[in-house]
Length: 83
Image 1 (tube, one colour):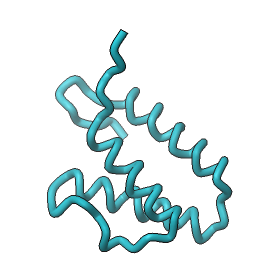
Image 2: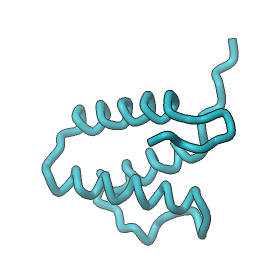
Image 3: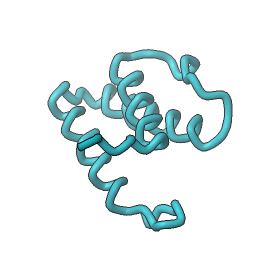
């Protein structure tokens, strides 16, 4: 069975979160404008906050996994989020 392709917005958020967790600057965002850029920046901001609060690697991984499960469950068929 093939794996379902991951949501691009979710992937952008996770990549931004990981970049902030590795203490990388916001300027390295690979997206210029649009919703992917905004999700990457949102992930970066949340990751930066967790980095400043001293979250460990396991806590960060658990948080990302929770976000993935939450975002997959809370989408309307037309693509709008409920949260």
